[in-house]
Image 1: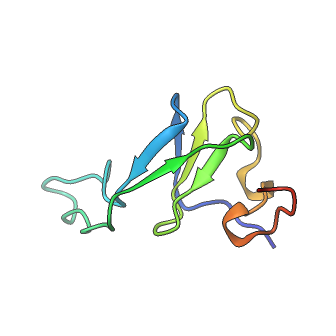
Image 2: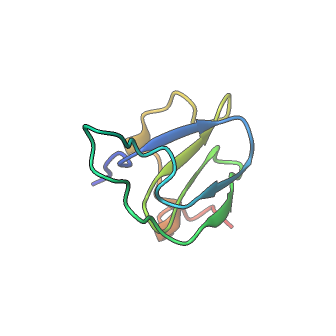
Length: 86
C-alpha cells in the first residue's frame, strides 16, 4: 500500500538540498524547530520527483511528470519498487 509523503515541496530546480528543518515554523506559538538531519543534496530525475532518505520530504519539479499527480500513487523509488529506475 502506498501512502502520500509527509511533506511535499514544489521546486523549479532539479538539484535541491534538504536538512530536515528548513521551513519549519517557529515563533511564540510553536515549539522550536527540530534539529533536523545532515544536509543532503538530491537530484530530481526523469520521474519528476525525489524523496529525502532521512525525513521522507518529497521534492517535486514544477511542470514535471509528478507535478499535479496523486503522490500516494507514485512509486517509492527509494525502496526500489520502480524496476525501471536506474
